[in-house]
Length: 362
Image (cartoon, rainbow, N blue to C red; front, top):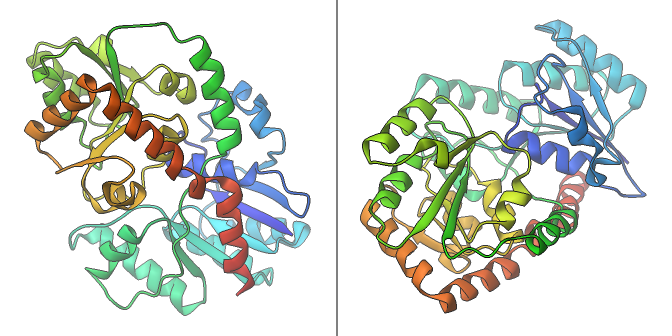
C-alpha cells in the first residue's frame, strides 16, 4: 500500500503537523510519502527531521508550478510511484490541479482533508463551497476532521456530501516519551504555568485569555506560543493591562513537548471557526488539565466537557473563575489530568490510520 500526503508548502502549523505525523508512521504494509508542491516554503530546520519519530519520513519536493503545470508534475510523480491513496491537505484551486493530475494517473482513492470550519456567507466561504461541490462531482472523498466542520458547512449549504469524520492525531508513543524525559528535568516552582499553543490569528482568541490572566489574583504564569498577524495587537493589549509581553509571547517554537512538560494547565481560547485544535490532543498526551472555549470543535474533542473544562467563548469572568478553581485545587487538577490520559487513545496515529484504511476500502 502506497500513500501520498500532499501539502502546498511546509509551514509550521496544525495541518502540516498532521501530514507529517501520518506520512512518518511506520507500517510494514505501507510506503508513505509527503509531497510538498512548493519547496521554497519549508519553515522547518533540517535538524527537526532528524528526530527518531521521522526516521521513516520520505519527502518529495518540487519548485512551485501554476495551473495545468501542477497537474503535469503530479501526473509524472504518481505514474512513477503508483500510489494507492492520495490525501490532500488544502482546499483551493491548486488542490483541483492536484486531483486532475491524480485522475490522469488513474488513481481513484483521492481525499481532501477538510481542516477548518466556516462561519458566515463570505466570498471566501462560497469559493470553498464551490470547490467542495466540484470534488463531489468528480468523486473525490471529502474528509472532515470534526463533526463541527460538517455542521459549519451545512449551515451555509446543505448539499455538500462529506465522508465520515476522521479526527486529527499524534504519535502518542513518541510524544509521551518526549514528555516523560522533559518532566524528569522539570524544576519545582510554586507558580502554576498556563500555556496556550496556537497561531496568533483571527480564528483564535488569545485576547480573552490575556484579559483573564491580568485579573487573576493567584500568582501564576502565562505563556503564549505561536506567531501571526495579531501579535502586535495582542502585545499592545498586554502592555495596556500592565503585563510584560517578553515574559508571555514566545513566538514560534518547535519544542512543544518540552514546553507542555513544564506547564501545569493548558488553555485554548478560540472562536467558532476552530476546526479541531491538534494542540488539545497534544495537551492530553502530556497529561495536562485543559480549559477551552465552548465552541463546537473543542466540545467535540473534549467529549462534551468530560475530558476538560469548557468556558463560554469570550467570557473573561468565567475564564478567571475556572483558572482560579484549577490553581487552588490539586484534586481538580489530578481529576482532569486523568481525564486527559483517558481520552487520548482514540487520537493516536495507529487508530486513526485504521480509519483511513477503512475509508479507502469502501
